[in-house]
Length: 111
Length: 112
Image (cartoon, rainbow over all chains, first blue to last red; front, side, top):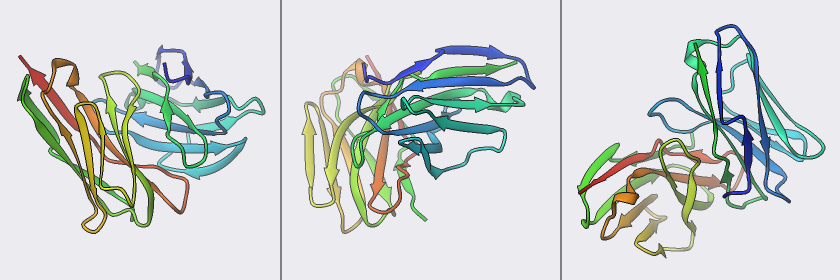
């Protein structure tokens, strides 16, 4: 158990819908990262937050947004979903310069 | 542009055999380089970490090497087991910026 909790584990939704993925980082970790992993693909960096503020942005679509709350949990919002958004979404947390610990992921299926 | 390239893309070996996975990176300067193991459908888990001044690091049957001059790292797995079947990902943390740079991974399958 990495200490990073992601909910839900599985999500099935229709095209055009909006979903929210949740991540609770390890205790004490201020950084939260979101990654997308499509079938048989590598991890694609989406966005990073540090202590509530956006710190780095990757290949995140405009239909996607995220935030980190004062209690340090983070949410990734995906809207106007398309079939191609089906993927595993991972959250990771770390202390500065430290190891990134990954959650077990949320498997999103868009039908 | 900071990049990490891994080879081979996939590999099949017999149980008990050794194998070596490669990672070439352009990230410079970098703080550390990690190898992660990702079981199918699960989050990656760190195997080894090396700073730019380290040449080798072991974790059981896993040994990582780093050549900062040629910007290459390798992960050697000895006496492979069926449970080693996974994706192995090389990840570099730049000194500047906050974005970890991930390789695409090598998919290893160990068969009996």
